[in-house]
Length: 199
Image (cartoon, rainbow, N blue to C red; front, side, top):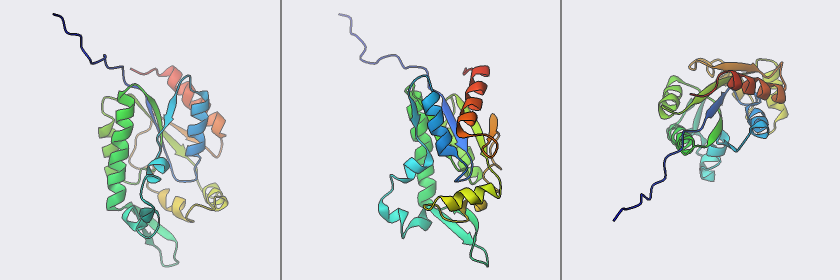
């Protein structure tokens, strides 16, 4: 008697688009524009969505367990590093994104890569998954202006990220959100993908 397999053939992996840049650089808006233009479902699995999964305690008093701020003498943020909970969250996020893609889903991820460990862990988790790395650039003073306009942001956070966020990643393409609208940046990403098909 022939037994039928209960396992369906695995689909080819989906595409992961990583948008890396400082906070307030326009990554989330760019991700939404890509979703609007995508031919099918494009899952948004960015850093803020994963941070929102944490218990409220870690978004308040225990925030230094997620991100640690080193302050300058004038009280501004001089540097940001991952705390132990932040590092664990990043590991989980990278592997969750990879798991989504391995089911055939296309995924966009807005990220803030602060150090070499984060970059290495991300690339390792996505091994074998088609991935496009996009640098989302925005310099001063526009970066600080946008940050001030967003009341929920910690002032000085973006400026502290700026010296390191692009230091550990080699990009497939970069977009400058000071020159391009979110729609124009999304179109630039889509053009690049059309010219460089997956596989």
